Length: 442
Image (cartoon, rainbow, N blue to C red; front, side):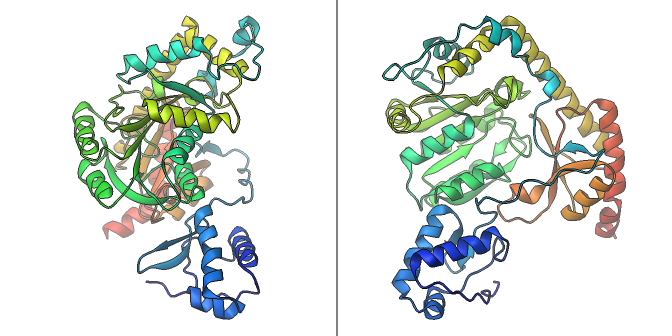
């Protein structure tokens, strides 16, 4: 266990302590994972009562800036959700394989849809969802086995996940999450003041025994990716989905949130868990298939959760723009757009498989059975990222996606990587990782 840092505070109030610690985290003086002094030590240093210091730390826990665990004390949250500097621009000539974006060349054009769509005028007090869009969603979700009687429209997958968790959980509740998993989800949970129960995964997604352990430890919700798991590309098959449904069925009070963020371009059939728990939400986003700037997702859920979601939405944004809803409905119904999406699905799978084959031919054991990314274990993450950057490739450090931050892999976005580029990348990766492999094998 690491020793508490020698942190001296000048704060003389709970609000001052909160502001001071937040500033220290934001500017890097306090690093993620650092252990803070005890409540009594901070109180003695600041001349405050332990109760006042505890109140300040409770506020920081609620915001996700610090975390506290039994026998581990209070620590700075890993990668806490505070505003930081913008990402540095990449050097000239570097190919960016780090961001998880779809290939812009495979997205449907919006020009025709904007010209042909009759844009509505939506007024206060009118229904929040466009019935045309809901009808299309019912057909698409129902075809994938998702009960689609109760739907609402939100501003993207993470917005829907946040709303579902906010109406069902309270700060301090714990959520079962995939490990490794989606980094922005981790940041969202920290911002909501929710804790983590990591669930190990393999190529078929969450391992049932690990999920059972997390739920038995008191997790009140589970967020699961059924296909195209980010960062590993894992996907449920029918057998794994049945096993996970059985685990969830034994814990009926748990909220299930299923994030199908890739939808029709995931590259593998959907084996949904929707309905396996009394309280559930299935999220279908259009951001990857139709374009990241189309901030829209459709949520299917149980009837009680729908009422809560609509109530919370009504006192916030009210609704998702009907101009956007109409545009998405037009795209969703257009046969030419459907053909574009189908072509993208085939090409994404081919590019992913080409990269995996090129890496395997050079002795690099990467994985992904679906999605846009490939997960490559490495012995020295920082060294691998730096070495590949020097060869003209930017990749994602795996520690961003690992709750323990151990840095054991890199994430490579293959969505725009043609087979010839995949061969070139794999050759550079073999050279970049050779020293680490030699050391590890020696």
